[in-house]
Length: 100
Length: 494
Figure 1 (cartoon, each protein chain N blue to C red):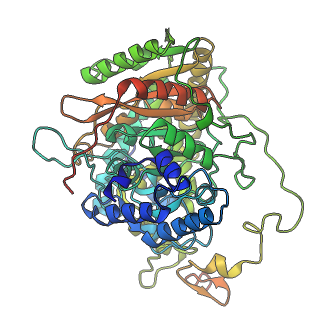
Figure 2: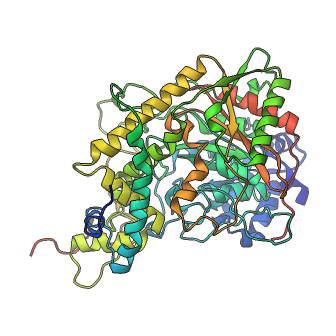
Figure 3: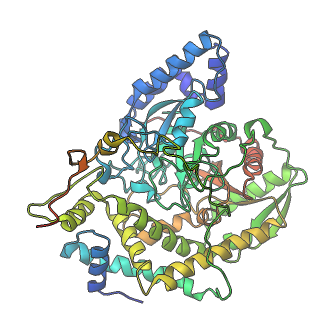
């Protein structure tokens, strides 16, 4: 199935990637080439086949029900969390104004 | 001290432990090689001081009579996909500009704990998406190998672990980390005449590795021989509660149990891998590999992996789908690049940041992934691909009922020239045709050098094993290594 330019523009918008006209011009044929190629999967008879959910089956573990069971992934590290933010103010991530 | 850089992992460890030379001398020798190899562009950032610090700790421990780790005194290169505390981690993408992690990945921490030191962060394909190292924001990595024709065309080191393969092959480091999502350890290893193993999915913790496709990503070692890979994998592997898919199993003593005697073992040769139009030299090297394994005592059997031709298209649905989800985190808010055009609102800031920060191949994959997961198309693409993935895994299960390991080529050709495939995404994807099936099934697989082709370029052979049977893969690799006698290395031009 071939997709049109408007669909590719919609996908770019869903993926939050700004694309100007020349970028869309380049992307539409590439996108369609790749889709046409992956569509050969339609030939495979998969009736009665379950989709894979885990490549190596294993039960998900529960962590210990305590605060900061692992200090590396626990709390109390606000400054470290914010250390790489392009803009951080008053202990928060800063973004452009969202509400007028 | 230039001969020190000819040594591999085991030789360096043994030499340091035995007092033949110091860890500091080793680190200095490799630091010098890294500093002199700017033309190869293998490193995004060099960290000579880190290598020296680690070396000094090892020398002090030895002087104090303390026990030394399995990688004591071994300086390594770290693919720039592993978060390293205090050292920039970019995934070779502009969008992670200036990101300096506050934490250390589990795998890199284990390597430091074993006595290794860091020479620097290695260049790679952006977010590990590529097979030639041409998608890095930091420029192409150049393979140290050249064709014999005298044309000096710059060749691809393979990808995505192209900085790793170039650095090991050019003797800038004795070993390096790689990650393999659909061949990113094995194909670059084959292109540069070194060894690399991707273990069973879950052996190495993914915690602190920049995520590409989480159900496929696995870390592994790249080094000059099978023994060095076994030693380094032993240091990298192990259960980690911080990764929910980490295998809670003991790590076997792979290096100590290496055995190249394959008597009683059966080696499967998948007939679907012998494709129409196969490169004659690749076919010949595969036949040679069969003869070597027979010589090592193995029985060779014909097997069928009937869904092989569908592995690559299934991969190019599954991996982009997971990537589109994983890469949603790059939003210009929490870390990395922010593009904020004047009067832009939050949504416009996201879109501008991602447009400026991601390279073309990354954008392509995010968009394909977004499409195949979108309402109305999910079942036709993603669910169908995951059903095909089940069938591919079933093929392997059935094949392994009659054999212990599988032998195949690693890649369909020797290294190609930079620029040769970069305009055609599908031609580039086809380079991983032999590597991707094992990735989809989560199986351990390794590439070992088999010889040189008529152009003087390395060719690799791939061994694929049963889940958790890294030992079987390494043993067959060792049997090939002993018979191939691969000693070639690139002539220094950089």
